[in-house]
Length: 387
Ligand SMILES: Cc1ncc(COP(=O)(O)O)c(C=O)c1O
Image 1 (cartoon, rainbow, N blue to C red):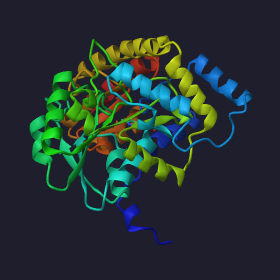
Image 2: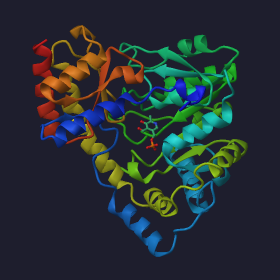
Image 3: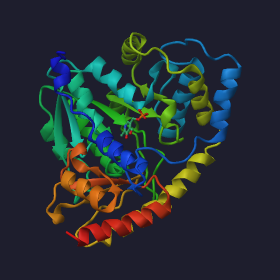
């Protein structure tokens, strides 16, 4: 069968491949320590589950407005005003099938053939593929461990050309766990304003912060920055709701209308009763978030300290999300060679950094129990010393 040119550019997910291999080994009875998870390992908090059950009992089982249930759109806007100092109203919000669809809708609405989209590397692996599917051109800007994997205002300025349409900012970051300080965010906002480009701020890990790190939404840097900002966020990571598929996009009413139009002809509304679970997540107690973050904080310490004690491996301390990004270049192996051999010889599954645009590193998720982390670190140490 002949597929489109558009699709020929798109790389299949390395993450899914390695995760599937580890899963198969497990099914065959092999004791695999997996650090591949891109999702919290906690159940969805009961009050959220209860709200969705109630919605089912109340007959919230029909088609709804493509842009989302009005009550949820209003609650998301209130959350953005309260938590992020972003003056949005319900008309600025589109409820989507996860953060993934919000970003995908945005690319389809904003990117013309050949438009450049600036993506700092390491990046979440779907960004460049979404840009390619929209027939745009991803412009990858590499960052370094020395700079804590953060793009500088100077790097951003230099990457901008007359074709630049959009800058993708992700803080806290997947895969590095880096969190831009408010000052760093303000400095990037200056460049966005000066060069008059759009910025999409992917804030899906905003609640998962450690050691007093602060999250500033770039849209809150100034009214000028707000005018150039689009927010993508969702419930998956903060509330352990990955399978629910509820996210959102926030932007000008025109942009939201355009994206709602795309969504109206593709998936239509997000599962109606799932939206009522999301509403409960926003309106209920936030203790569940605090508890999850406290558990992650403990695991993060064990993980980052353990990695940095292994001769030849190093990682910056992550200040957000639930990943460590580990430099393995001193072993002389590429990220894929390292990950493959580690799985084969020590049954430890990690994601090779090449998937995120950095072949010197691997990503380990600590969204798993402490016992697995300790065993995995011991195996990782044994693997590196055997090289
Ligand atoms: C940085 C980032 N953005 C967006 C998403 C999409 O999340 P979802 O579609 O599950 O809401 C993810 C998921 O892994 C992510 O890591």
